[in-house]
Length: 120
Image (cartoon, rainbow, N blue to C red; front, side, top):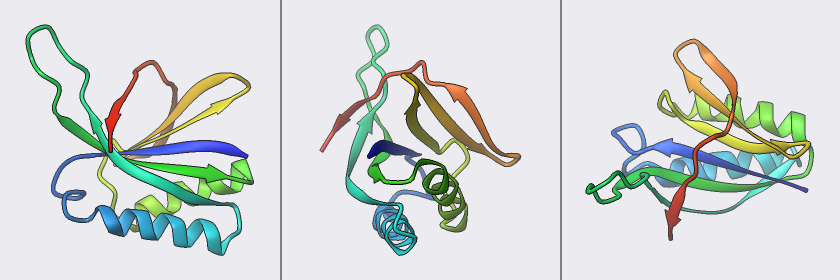
């Protein structure tokens, strides 16, 4: 089993639609038998000098049973659910933390260099 998590930037496309993302991802993953949603919560921004952290992302934790098909399915499902640009999918390959980041040009993969604080 692999662990993925999705970070959806807080904003009009996410606020008050969190349940749509949970249910949509879980339905797609379980229908294809490649994983399931484990839970979700709020992620805070990184603290800067004197600025307090603020709510920045909605996080969805996912358990994956078949890595590549699940990754592709998560990407397609997030696009179908109208996830905002800047949505991230985090995962690890051979000990390297990676993230897929959505934009109007599609998905790009980058090393993951940021940490996330989250609350439930």
